[in-house]
Length: 308
Image 1 (cartoon, rainbow, N blue to C red):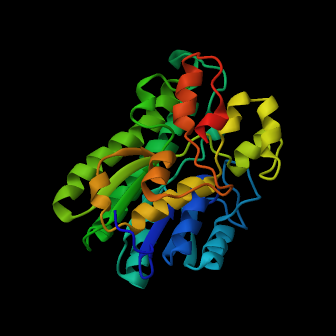
Image 2 (cartoon, one colour; image 1 turned 30 degrees about the horizontal axis):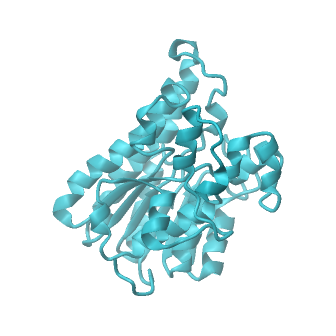
Image 3 (tube, rainbow, N blue to C red; image 1 turned 90 degrees about the vertical axis):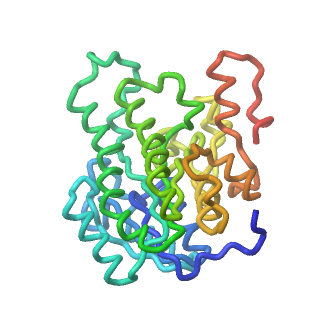
């Protein structure tokens, strides 16, 4: 592994779905290494998406990128609208002439997930199809539009953000539609990796662990400062990680001149943390999937502290 100080100065990144959570943190950490980051999403200071949250906007994300040391550019974009995505890519080409990093973190479907594990035929069809639009179709549209610009220069990186690795997702995830929505990005990364082999690019899928996103913190009625109070309600939250963790890992892979060794891989925030020596905001190095795999298997006496 190259041990030089990581630097993304002069590199252009697009983080699609950077309003909040992992997307926001990834954008900020890319900026902290000097990248210019175009951040997109549907929630702006003037308009709220179907997610219904007004507390995070793409303008704020862009400001955080700039404050971290990069240049943040907010572009309101619905990634299910092909014309909007094409216009976004054309703008990046016009203003920068290149694209080095594409992060597909588009989702916004938490409100569609059935907490009770309904059968496929019991799930409202429109709800299920909307999940697939948000988690799969939007990624396909974005990659189709952005890859011609990304492959113009050798060494481009595509990151598909999802929930779970190829290994952890061998079992059933939540329900029929959620399972498809979160397994598809793993295959998309693998397939794009195949197509990038001949042009010097790299594609990977990356999952955070139990993410302390703004939305998740609100769900448990806690803040980042007192997040551990939620463990009483949900014991597995003891392994939760902040969005900074996956953000730092992805920034490091983006800055790694030898990142081609990862091509086609399904990775976790923990995998990147170990490979690049990064840590979460609190100095820990959580292994959420290692912990959760044992908990979900019904093992008793598994301690989260042993996986931090």
